[in-house]
Amino acid sequence: MRFGQSCLMFNGLATALFVVFCLVAVSAKAQQLVFERSQLPDSDDTNFSYTWQPSNSQPRTLQFEVNQTEFLAPFKRFRNYNKKRANRELFQQLNRYIRQQNWRGVEVSLAPREQQLSINVREARDSQQQQRYRQQAERLRQYYRQRWQDYLQSNYYRHLTLPSGEQGIIPDAVAIARQQEPLFNPLVNAIGETLRDNSRRGYTDFIAQFIQAIPYNALDDGIHNRGDGFLPPNQVIFYNQGDCDSKASLMSSLLRPIIPSAKMAIVYLPGHALFAIAMAPQPDDSIITVEGTKMVLVEVAGPAQMPAGQIASQSQFYIDNGQYRTAAIN
Image (cartoon, rainbow, N blue to C red):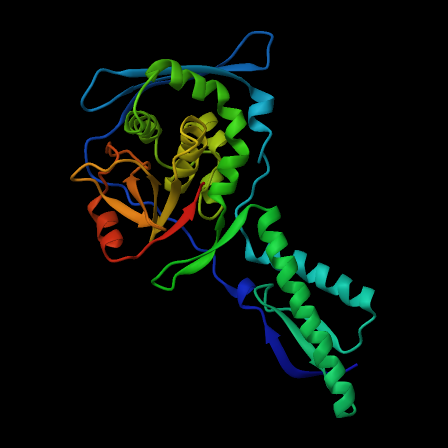
């Protein structure tokens, strides 16, 4: 069977991985004084203890306890997006679909080096048969688009395109954060017992300081070599490290259960990620407006210690020039 040169390329899988490298602001550092993780004797329960030093107050502490197996189980095998792996899986699904349909006019190819998935249309003997082959190819393209979206959703990925044209596949930090919220009930309860009846800004600043004090970077065990370095929120807590989008995801997991009525979002900039929450802005706050709602921006990456509404100068430059995209949390 001979196939012609007509080739239908899939731009979705040809898209390069969008890598989020976080900007680290130069300011007063949120210093983590104590991090202790200890497994209780004859138990699978693990105790976490934190002490950190805010720049304008006395040291703050948090302590909570979780079942380690249950805490680490969700997203234990989470892997960042890899184009070759995605192409291989979809290549198999498309070929299986072709066999099920008993089609003879189309073929899926994967080359070079598994970087490009394409459909080849067979050269027919006459125009009527050629039209049938083109119809098969169109149906296969539709099937591909469906399976591509299913692949992203089932693996907790999302497509991101910035105004600059930079685009790629990133972890769906919002969906991952929502899935992990129940894991953090002990930590959320500890935060509530510490702050009690406090303001929306008070809770936002407290949790932001806690997360800013968590060391910024990837892990020493090689996890930082997995592409963009994203860690699910439970792993940020367990390993006590994370990058900007990992910390923004953790911020969502902790703050949304406390203030479920507040609109929140993760804000993606070139090379960085912020958190945003709807609350009454103060005069000098950095804000964005999302669908008519004013949202105050929060730098959660650390190690710079910044209250809600204060962001790095480079972040402000991108915000002022509209170089960002938001992912709504609620």
